Length: 413
Image (cartoon, rainbow, N blue to C red; front, side):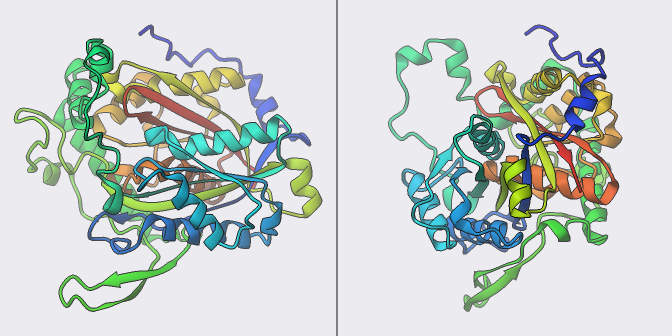
């Protein structure tokens, strides 16, 4: 691919346009998420995804006192849904008290599904189809981890195309490919991963995540006594304190005997949900809804499947160029840490100040519920902006099978 990731010379004149407020802006009036918990053993191990999603959908509209009848459409990002996927989201919507007349759809653009859902709703508002919509993301990797498998295999004719065949490369191997192709030493990956844990642990101790997490009371079976009951899930349980580069250095590679990717420098397998309500600014103002942020835009791009992790390297410049911004106009970035190898490489190549990236830690420390992450990053980004005074932020992630996506937002809190 060409070096399309140069973003240092974009015109600064775009900043005033991005910060301007217009009646037809797409704004965010509510942003909530569940805690993110460890798959198969964390707080949501006994809770199906539709139940997690239902609680978050209900929280999204009740938090701001919005009549759910005014929600005109819903899109939910979900990568590993049971069955066809659409039914579970529809069930969650109805259980959450949203009227039967409100339509819903699910979208699967793998790791960017939550952001893709927000982009879909924003596009509907921009085109005039709706005035208020809800975008969400959910994943239970406890219940859905094998749902995407194709038991019948794939067409040999299609697989004769090398890049099509590369789409089947396990994600961990794509991480090794990035590390090998672009010379990212394991020591650097472990240092990046340790920093993610350290930032997340510090933020959690300081209560930084509390405003963005909606506690959910869910089923729970004690793994020792097998006694059934309920529990309140109100914090991210994958965050570990005391992780260092040295402690990570003791872990064995997970995907290749001589590789550098392991359980400590890759995103955690997790469960969770997040949701944002978007609206036309003029309608939000008329209804007296709080405006917490502005959706500026989002864009996706394809990259070689064998190094799918480089997606943010190309998606971020694309979304900034469309807005006329330079990388320095952005106050902070939420870049998904699918693997330390790819996240570290993208940040280095983009020339972004590491102090602006994942300031409260990323998916290595918090977890990566696939369909949820794109929406979760928006929620966390708005929370970071409110607590730090930041205004413009970018979210981004690589996407399995070789893509990247990025979103651009402005905080108005």
